[in-house]
Image (cartoon, rainbow, N blue to C red; front, side):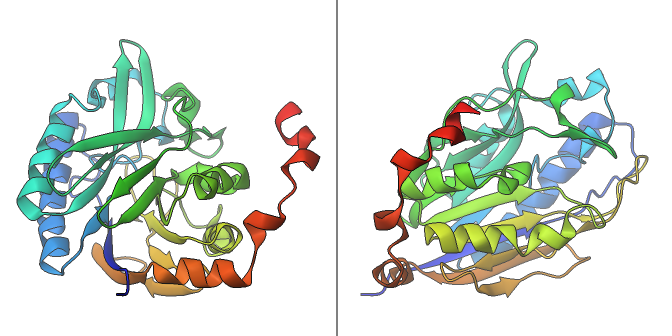
Amino acid sequence: MPRITRAALIQASNPLEGSEDLKAIKREMIDKHIGLLESAAQGGAQVCCLQEIFYGPYFCAEQDTRWYSTAEPVPDGPTIKLMQDQAKKLGMILVVPVYEEAMPGVYYNTAAVIDENGLYLGKYRKHHIPHCNPGFWEKFYFKPGDLGYPVFETSAGKIGVYICYDRHFPEGARELGLNGAEIVFNPSATVAGLSEYLWKLEQPAHAVANQYFVGAINRVGTEAPWNIGEFYGTSYFCDPRGQIISEASREQDEVLIADLDLDMIQQVRDTWQFFRDRRPESYEQISSW
């Protein structure tokens, strides 16, 4: 019997663009995403991933300690508890990217994974943290991830997570493949004119090199007052052959749904024996430099 997973990605804009009320922004974004999650469930999605730090704007466009107040413990914070309730209500696996407070003064860019019964399965912490102009001051807000590259066993397949800037690094993408990932979600916040030319290049390449499906998410719109550029949407799914099989619009809030044939992974690996033919003993400098 074919192993078909119906998966969803959500890309969305901030309904309170330019607001200084951080609590109101967070509340409105959460409410908006609950509605979009309901749409994903109505479309038959078994698993859904939200965008990077889904409940706010991309605040790393500035360096300001006020944003620390939006971080929460994972899994014991109110947002993850709410999303556990939503996962159970909708019968849908959720990948929920949030701003995590691990302890006072220690923060991570994190995604929690919750199963369709509302059970918290674990989390991934973003490993690669950019700090560059214009407007990507992430080292001010996040420590590098320290939990490795976990893969979560779910009823919809084996799920891994990579977050935004991580996608520029093939090493972690390979770790996810070696750990058994069948679907890797990459929630992102990226703007036109900077790395857009890489958007449909790197992640399909990871899918090919590691022979899994990739769900790439980007938010949409511009975000005042920083206006660092247009978040250009175009979230997509690609298959283990690197083919984009479903793509969202550039400018609109959207729930993108696609059917992923997980049996294709075995078919592709029967053709391209990349894991068999790799030579880890010859790659010593990768971890020593």
